[in-house]
Length: 205
Image 1 (tube, rainbow, N blue to C red):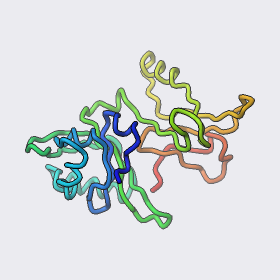
Image 2 (tube, one colour):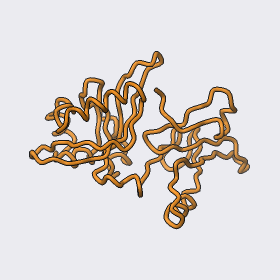
Image 3 (cartoon, helix red, strand yellow):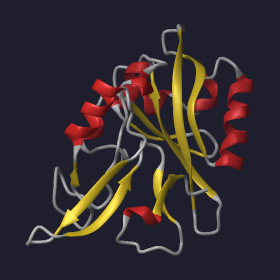
């Protein structure tokens, strides 16, 4: 089953992917198929045996893997890829390594943008524990309007957003930072887990 079956992943124009440590494509959304020149996710999953084969410059793949092993996350990494029709394309890759409890990398997941400047005007923030639009155990309230206003009018890009959850009386009972994908909120190991200040944006690696 594709790991990006939720409607938001199928509609968003940003390419999502998940690959094994050997480069096998495990999951993707339609935007990735479009970037690589395939008509559908199914055609791409069937045809593309490993992502290793679409790197035009093998040294880029070697550097990508080395940085994943040592840093666990890559932001804005420019790569030269081949498409199904034989043409090539430069994309900007941001990804993270997903590890098990023993620290062994299980797989990689990330996003590709055709526009190298995409991060200058677009960021993705996932909201763990939140149902569609609102509800669920996670903090589901964010001042999106202020964030957009600050970015557009003041040039202040949101490196981190504050999300909160309130009880039936309107009292804030939980806050968390929302981090630009592929970064996640990581607890500092000592602070109050209900307070956003106890978390920093980073990667579990």
